[in-house]
Length: 200
Length: 200
DNA sequence: TGTACATCAGTGAACGCGCGTTCACTGATGTAC
DNA sequence: TGTACATCAGTGAACGCGCGTTCACTGATGTAC
Image 1 (cartoon, chains in turn red, brown, yellow, green):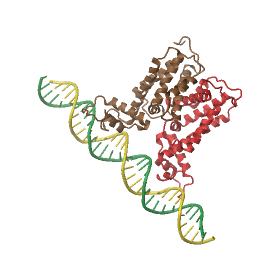
Image 2 (cartoon, rainbow over the protein chains, first blue to last red):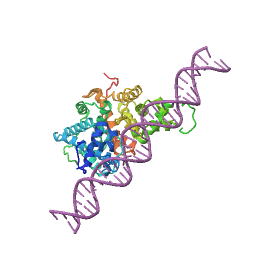
Image 3 (cartoon, each protein chain N blue to C red):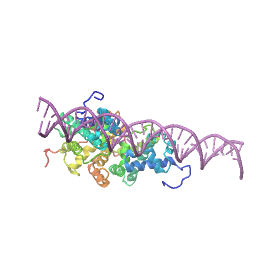
Image 4 (tube, chains in turn orange, green, purple, blue):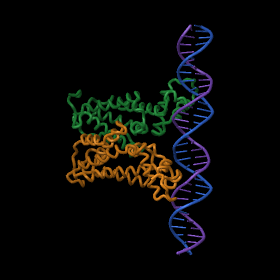
């Protein structure tokens, strides 16, 4: 893919640069992303990306958006194999969450580690909203507590996000996903669920 | 502190460089830390730090350690004003956790965002262990569940860490600590505590 | 179907920047006697 | 108390590196007629 002869016009350089960026971040963490390295990995000159991404921040934003898409996909894949039981679905989404974070720490840190990005990007907003929607959906059947439906979402989300983040911090690079999943299933408390999951 | 006349020998340049590093990270995030900027902020030439920190990684490790000390201090301060009730103590430590994270997002991200560091540093291990000890102490009174005492620690820690991390991610830079604390107090579930807090 | 031409999407050289690090040096300090 | 000297802890110049970005250019593509 890198050195083979190409026509002057690349087929879809934008997508190729995003894929290259994801690969760089996966391999070397958030700081490993650079325009020149992404261009090299995509097999074009280092000036070519400028046409598709005016600045490094734009490329980073697009890579983060791709991260969110893969993140959402990881949760959806687990959800597809889950029963309709609300607790099963919360556990399944958590498995997808943990698998993504532990398999791609670089992307996870890029997404949640405070790297600057273009918050106004449509592509990013769409991708991030899709991920949030999964968490909102699985939390909806929980009976609202003191903090309402939003409190339930934050509870479920915080628990699994914290577990992912701390597991990564404790065993940098070599965390066992199955152990983290087992721990998640053990610490998720019993919750009360609506009898009518569609809500009041 | 920056431009005033100094003798050839700095009093405690090592400490001054760590303080400068903390300040840089607080202001500009994990990537804002550099040897040259820390030296400038401490009022010395950019070659001076080499004597105290052989490489940038060493300075970064020391700044992370200082972050852990301030983090621990933030929790201890809140704990000092808490009652002996186990739940009150868990809430108090959580307040310290959230206050630190929301007041110093840059440091928080440097500590937990996957930045590379020297894991073998005594200074860092000591500082990080002190923080973990606080969480272990406040979790000790919880009756062990399926995952034992370790499960309790991870539950409490994950919940507050996830909440801090996600609150930062959702409102980059301008998160309201009091709102986050209120949310934490609302979503922390009822837990069962030992009657003898010292354990079996 | 063929030709002229505008536009698109690349190339490669060049620029300046901040960086970590090295090196010869030197002024300040502290110790031996 | 005074002096010689080793060592400590700085300075400032220099090096090379990777980077984002700009620019004049050019080959490929597609459209008008």
